[in-house]
Length: 118
Image (cartoon, rainbow, N blue to C red; front, side, top):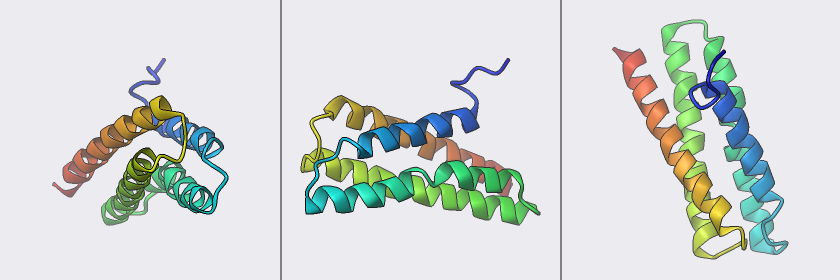
């Protein structure tokens, strides 16, 4: 059986679920609602886009879809940094954990794209 820690699809599923849980805890203000919507969109996008990459029709299509995942993760990273800076939640530990996980996922996608381009 695959170790969930090393199964990228499982890791992206848990990441998306953690994003959803964090978004539900953001402050119910204009700023909180705006950031929540943006983070919900970008933070859950890597999971389905990774599925699209797995069904890619060519190596170029695979790389393109992996780059979309990377783009969404980078956007999420910035929203998370903003949430911590303002702050928009008292769940500081959850934000820090998600920032760290986002950074790790970004590194994984960068390396995967580099490997696929060779």
